[in-house]
Image (cartoon, rainbow, N blue to C red; front, side, top):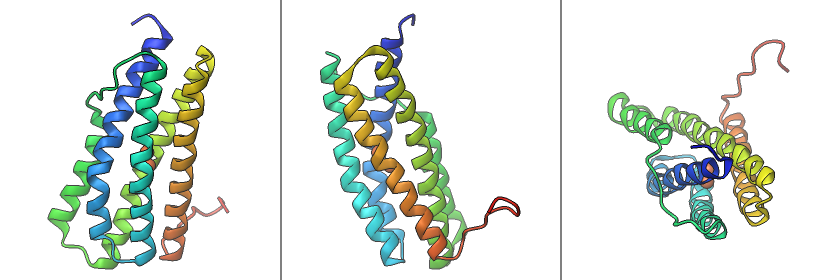
Length: 165
Ligand SMILES: [Fe+2]
Ligand SMILES: [Fe+2]
């Protein structure tokens, strides 16, 4: 690979796979969450995730490329951790909610990093349609992370290290 444009297409394939995987996983989180606010947040993000997939399909189109995903081991790893935790630990509803907040936050950080890099790449390539579509997704991911952090504070898990406040 020699061109930044090829990298953008590679990144789009990676995140398309990730978003499709999340479309499958988020209904499980909705089922598993006990706190109603947390559950509603996962439901809302499932709807947003479907929009993210549509935006990605449009971004491929804008670049004249076929929209196809490519295995993203990063997101597979996070979802495997989730499955293993649920299977092995027989957690109470309270603890499971806290776990789901952590798992969800890991995913949002992953997506935020991916979209931030892709927006930068699209900017350097002057791909205006891609910039707008990817920025939309990035802003949703940031908002989703902020909601998870609010849920963590509400459920009593905010643990800022001493001196960081
Ligand atoms: Fe997303
Ligand atoms: Fe997300």
